[in-house]
Length: 211
Image 1 (cartoon, rainbow, N blue to C red):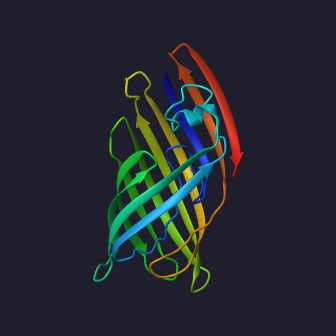
Image 2: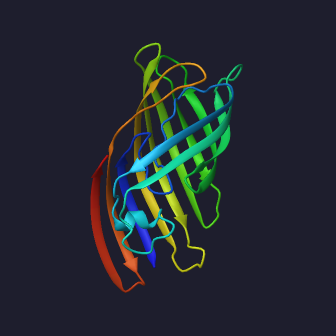
Image 3: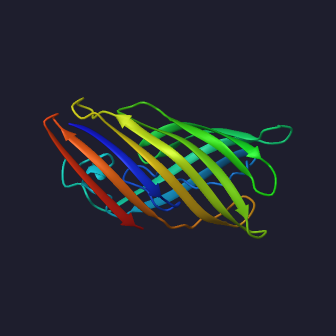
């Protein structure tokens, strides 16, 4: 069974899909030294075809609410650098990755771009993203992290190759300063799905969820 999915999503920090969290929301400003970032995510019912990519024990009727998370460790270089940057690694649900980020703007509205390279096991998730911070006060800022996600791979038995492409929009409100911050957020997501089963029948479906 071959499956492909194109998804357009407006997603916050606390919304994801199955064994992955598409829109991780982080500050555009590089923190020097070692840092750890974690997130918890929860999705409503994303639709049967979309959920197939993320629920490990499901072959059909996969549409159900799904919880996930992301944890990453990064080392930031800022002092003496024209372009502050971070390098690191993490685990997005069940997908490990390597990550690099460069802060291109250091003014009143920091911004930058980054990329994640999934480590190819059975499945690998890759992402190209941006980060923008809009300061609201000394202890609060609005974060916007748009991105493009690509998931590809095959099942362990080699019988179910598939790919997924998603446009993500992560928006959050970062509260706090210093070594600890908290970022609550909210959003919606919509999917357009095409499923090709055994190259014989074609079924099209679409779904939207409000989260």
